[in-house]
Amino acid sequence: MLKTKKIVEYIVSWLKKYIQKYKSNGFIIGISGGVDSSLTSLLVAKTKFPTIVLEMPILEKKNFLSKKHVTFLKSKFKNVNYLKKDLSDIYVSFCKIMNVNNKKKDEKTLLSLANVKSRFRMLTLYYYANKKNYLVVGTGNKIEDFGVGFFTKYGDGGVDLQPIADLMKSEIFLLAKELNIPSEIQNANPTDGLWEDKRTDEDQLGASYEELEWAMNIFENNTIKHHNTNFSYQESKILEKYYNLHKKNHHKIKPIPICKIPDYLKNNMHKH
Image (cartoon, rainbow, N blue to C red; front, side, top):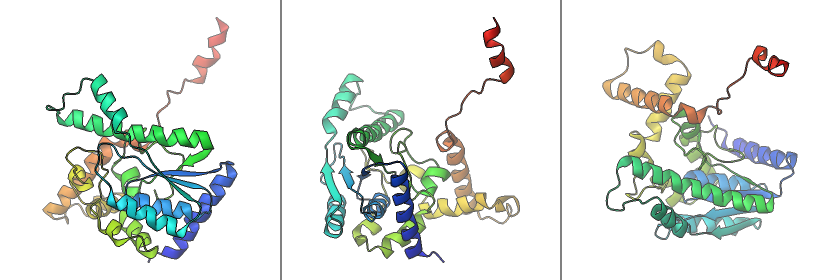
């Protein structure tokens, strides 16, 4: 049984210790109106340290859920400051420079542009973080960050700390319910908001978070080796989907590889 209140207290305490250890002045977090960023920003606000919640639309219509969350946050916390910066112009300029054909965009181009949007948002977050000596807070959950690598490298993956990355999506929903995050946010279809066709996370992943969570538990507990004949056809397809995503995005999940030079080569460098 998930001890939601204790976990909330633990994360808030962890955030306080971290910011004090590194002598930063506050936190900054990008918000989307989704449950992950809503929960994370609420946990950060609970530290009582100065907190900027930054909304960064790119060619998007008005985000009702972001507005609702900001209203909810500011009604509870005096330490929260809301900023909204529309990055549409810089994105459109980038597309012009790169000669992007708006009428003919294949899947690779669409993916590249989705990642560009995410990286523009990272740049904006770090602009304010550097100016104010703030920490950029990530909003990724365990499935995204360590299961299927569902984030943009140096985009939403470019952060200083990850408060909810050890929580599964189902656990995040339990914490959101505990903290009374607006029901519209809890019930909304998860989406990163980066695609022109408004595809959801499930559209991109080819499986639901519930299914991927199940598959991740199977692989982490190593039970697949002992029960490989007991899975239904649908379960086998989900396991295959999870495995392929994990393998494909493994480079994002692991630290950047370093070419370690053997000592016998380094020791000889200065002898010639």
